[in-house]
Image (spheres, rainbow, N blue to C red):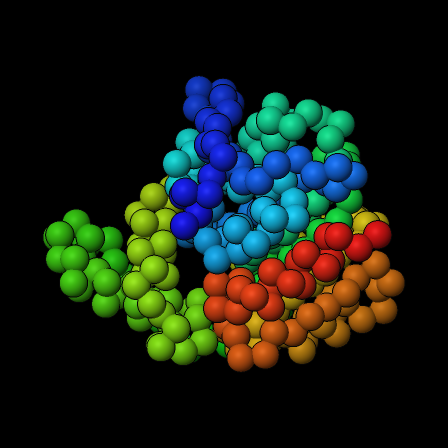
Length: 274
């Protein structure tokens, strides 16, 4: 569905490579373009169930971040590998004076707040299950290794491993791990070259949030195993007048896939409001 909806995909040059930006919808008068950032071991299709609805309200741009999906890998370090190419290609695409809004999921939330602090004109943020919090996690179990299975060509076993890993970290029940989720996750894992975990896992989100004075909506799924939402609401939202929260009941980490209608409504209301 999202492939058919895409107006265009632009490969914006940077150094000796490029960043792939997928564009949906048309410019909307007096409304900032909306940038959607995917998570670690992800791609632009982390937003597969959201783009169509959001593109009815906003001009939407969804990159494969550097080292993910179709985009080139530039550097293993966060600043030269992710932030600098993201800002450069975003400005080449829209202009460095264009005001924007950003919604970031997981590692994309951590990227989003860094972009907001380093690029002028980020009006509002929405962070969904953002990485970088450094707080307690609630793991269900160890993720299963898949690279050797992929190399062996055993497609059935590969799907089983991806299904288990999606349940362990991304979705709240086995029943919601459908064939589309498995395809998106498997393709993204295979294409991933940038290692996000060593960068975001130690923390740093709170310090970045303190630097940004614009409005921030922070969203968590009730059963997100990558964090303890109640702890983060107290630590990151309470006492900050520019920060709002939403806890999505009966959802895990990949909250916008599991509860798309609720997330689409929340993001539309958030980014349309003054």
